[in-house]
Length: 227
Image 1 (spheres, rainbow, N blue to C red):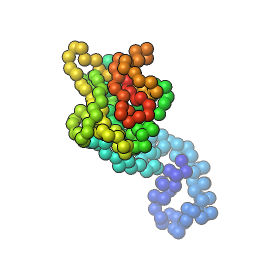
Image 2 (tube, one colour):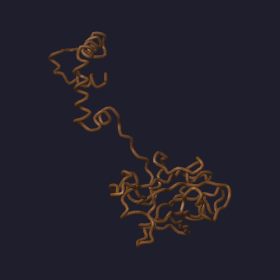
Image 3 (cartoon, rainbow, N blue to C red):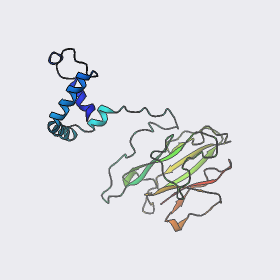
Image 4 (cartoon, rainbow, N blue to C red):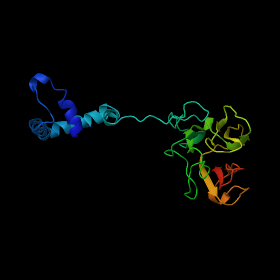
């Protein structure tokens, strides 16, 4: 509130307050009187601004942080996380995944373990971020692709092992099956465990699971579960 008052106060024509320094004691006193005498008018103005000017306080008072300069092999990884509106049934469907250096929007882990895909691998911090959208664009399956050479394809996300001493390039493949038997994904999570698993943990309601993301590089077993 004081910052916003100062902003408008400074916009008053200078000839009304010639030579007045807002940081001086007279200036501070005058500014305090201004605030006290006009509190009700300011409250009314602020209410109008919040309705009439979207995100006014945020855009005026706070700088916009620059995104980290990471390239995981796909275009514009920092655009918003909702590509399409909800379908008529009100549900949201997994339409893509992103690999990012921030955990702010990462998927969770079923037991509360680390969600860093390179945990224990001495590589870059890499997090799996879901993109939600409409059923018509939904992913139905996720697979892993390990390669001796670097790959580029529209359905591959990675290499998620950046900075690691892994012998393979590691990618996550998004699959969009069509047909009446295709089931779109509406839930996704990581599963970190110290025991190898071949089957899907049905008891938690999951219907699909990738192979081990850490295959061939040691550490914990790490899977992506979905349903």
